[in-house]
Amino acid sequence: MSAGEPFTMTVRHSTVRGNVWGAEGPVVYLVHGWGGVAEQLDAFVEPLLASGHRVVSFDAPGHGKSSRSFAGPGRATLPEFSESLSCAVDRFGQAHAVIAHSFGAAAVVLSVLDGLRVGRLAVVAPVSDPIGFSYEFAKMLGFRERIRTGFLRVLEKRVGESMDRFDIPQRMRTADLAGLPPLLIVHDLGDREVPVASGDRLAAMWPGAELDHWTSLGHFRILIDPDVVRKVTAFSSVPRTLPVP
Image (cartoon, rainbow, N blue to C red):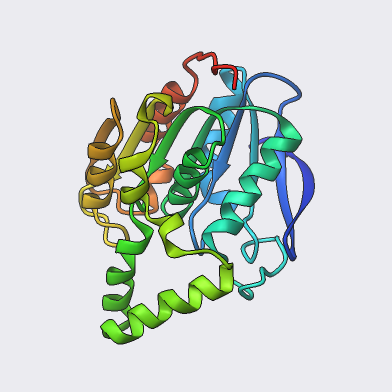
């Protein structure tokens, strides 16, 4: 893959580091998941460049080459993911498309619900209900309901916002659905990290969403599968004029 041009941004307490490829063309942003790094979406860079796009990718606060977040090293909150994307859009221009993975997909969906203008959105193995996912999180770590609800209260204090803001199903019920961008959801039926039911729920909430199931790729190999990359690149490359706000 060709070397990108490095850049830095300040997001809250963090120095966010990323790369941009291409000097011109509609901009496509790549957003990794929680505990991931920007390089996990590198397979999309060359195909997007070949289709005439400019590509922007970054490590979220506390991840990869970016400095620690206020939540500590190796971790970040949904607002930090969302704010990193917003800062990148402010710097490099309107998002023709965003391709996001896992927890990063939840951050992008919330950004769109908060008013970020995105032409097209492709999500891979998306977390569609961050609050609901806390039940799976508790199950994975073996703690009970008292600890789960306490964990959410700690998160509220840490981010300084009500958890209701991050309740995607609740927010979708009151959102202007006509203003949502076209959405492609790609999910593996055997995903062990984020069950396929999460992608199915997002498809049911999002009018006109295209849902594409795959097998034998899991949560991470799906990001480098050539057929998946071609599918997502083709979807992200379709021209679309964003409405004037």
